[in-house]
Image 1 (tube, one colour):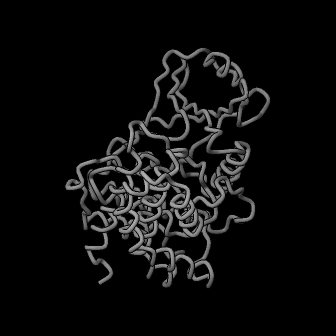
Image 2 (cartoon, rainbow, N blue to C red; image 1 turned 120 degrees about the vertical axis):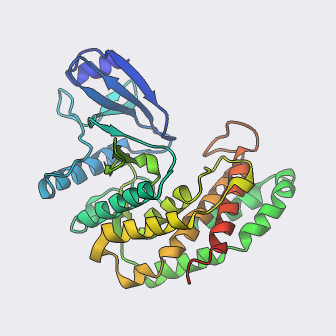
Image 3 (cartoon, rainbow, N blue to C red; image 1 turned 45 degrees about the vertical axis):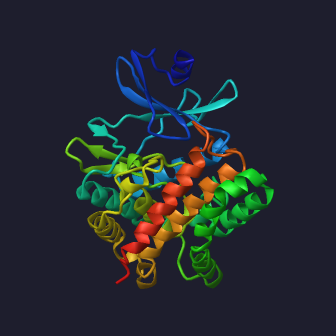
Length: 341
């Protein structure tokens, strides 16, 4: 397979192919040839129903960045012999990126500086695209961060779930219902158009930033979810994934904590990256962004469990109820900080 794919790009057979397992959606490999290194990805069509949409979005944004910020490092798509940036091979879709020398990814945020660097990078990315026409981008995942939709799906899952699962999840459902105000706030944002739309990344976990060997952020990667959205999606996902040293699969809830200094690093990094593109009203929702994404992810995990793990799947029985409780615990401890003051 790999030899035929590389041949379509006019490249020699690979000397070495190393799987990269940090992503949960697409399959990714580092491919080393006799002349150069590349990143090869197979697009998950169960998630991205229209691979051509993500391909066009990335090309448009890359061209814009190259024209307006020529000195910035940005993921570069390689074209096939036929001039395409996406390759269909045996009913599957692949794309190839240049590997950026001296770069690395990290999976866990260990220092405040890493949190700051990543937040600054995502803020700067949105700021640099502030003149890009939003309407030119495809919606690659409709309703991805629509909390109204996620709440509706959660209620539908409760109605459809088996009596056994409802009994098992009863306490968790009641605890989640205490946070319905998070959805109410989001409904107000949408209805009253309180926040402007930006072009945002939508998946700001730390592994989606390239770092140099000395831990300086280089650029964002994994750009499939670039779409118009509210800033709370990007900041909230950083809160969800940077604040605790434990990830969403941690089963020992006592290990789930919120690091206040990392919260401050996210806020300062993002606001400095955005500069004047983050208005005064948006700044009032910085704390809310964490509530927004953490609550939504808890809903999504429990919804999936009630629906027999049809979306995320499960490596073992009960993984998604464990994840839901993990995220709800994170939300409760996030609120306990009372960082609004």
